[in-house]
Length: 354
Image (tube, rainbow, N blue to C red):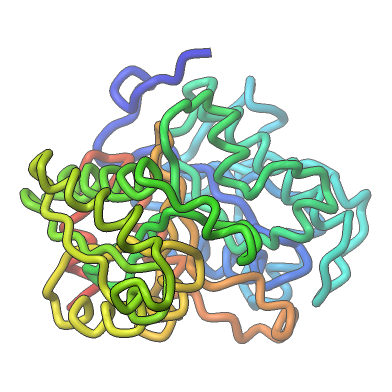
């Protein structure tokens, strides 16, 4: 199935159609999503399709202390919108039972997985220009039926994307991507290749150019401590990463490094570069979350529509307490709306940074 562009699917720059998901029912996702949609400005910025289990939504409303007023629709075939309120496609995945809070479980995983499937279907049918989901839990998703490395690889298959995909993480105006993602640490070194480094740099450079950065400056980390110390702590920098950077520079990209992973974010935070490409998940994520955990955004790069969430997780430890903050989810929603509307993402990054 071919995927429609925003223009062909009837979107307007002012009112894109965004699917919103509650995330993992056992975590803080339902609370966060309800708080987000209780802000009228968000419902004025986009036409929102909320796909949710009624029992999970009710629990989220109770925990958040907010009550939504959605327009009920029976199916995607009957989808319609009214100004100022979300449309709700209700699905009884929980069989009328509220979720067990604070733990991974099959029922919550299945509900979040089924919601993701419907969201991607709405995009494939040309009924949405973007997806925003509250925090998911990967272990729950696997218990609920996910067989892919993560939700990004699942959506890659659903959208029939054959090229390189990866997560972008944004804190203020700084972006990151990575060569490997949700794989065991013991497998990382074998997955570091010249092609992989090149793909990770090129995809974030292209995204930054679309975001209004004419000449993206991209720092590339090493894999090993001190970027290998000239080969005394590993040869990946000499044999793989440096040759990839040299090739990228020959192609006209401003790729720099490899830099020691424990110092590269000092200059990045200062503004020396626009993005950092790390070799594995925690190399970049720990630094980014320290710089702005509550404001961080995760954007799934390489898909035909923007798919975004907050950088924070399902937070089982505070589920049900009503204290979950939504700054990151709000930034993710704003980013998704701007991208779906064709507004330069750079404007969003500058707004977050101020």
